[in-house]
Image (tube, rainbow, N blue to C red):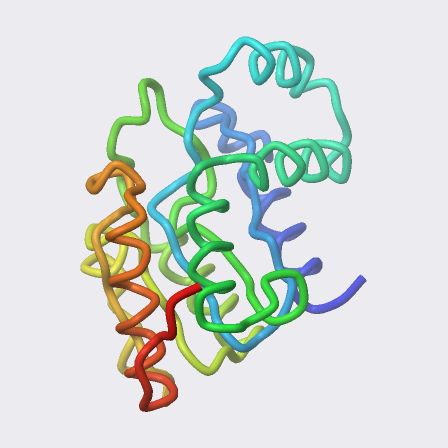
Length: 193
């Protein structure tokens, strides 16, 4: 088990301990594929399609590793991750080797309501950033960016954008972010793909 897996397991065990039973939530951790870019969202979206409800129907009976594997296989099919993959493709970064994705809050909320960001959530994200050590952290949620108060502890570039859903996951918005990232990170504009 590597450092990020150990960190996630400690957080998971804490949230499922007896003293936290009234706040019972299953933490859904990030996709850690590399350290060039780290994208941060607000929190995982709740399952809404019929096939997601079927997939997650026995979620609580699964082991930690099975839960995380199921979540990750579902997450990579989401509009959010597909949007990030398109950004990466536009700036010639291999999503599967050089990019990680996480959320500031690690559990979904009823009706995808905006979650409360706790000090534990902020500390966990700070630990993720320290371990992953990305070249740039890209918040795809102004709410998450505003609530993360440890940015000054890192010598890393932090960027903030609206959540893609606020722009209906539009191609125009994706290209705008990609162009901004290419210019900010590499000093050149995105070529059309």
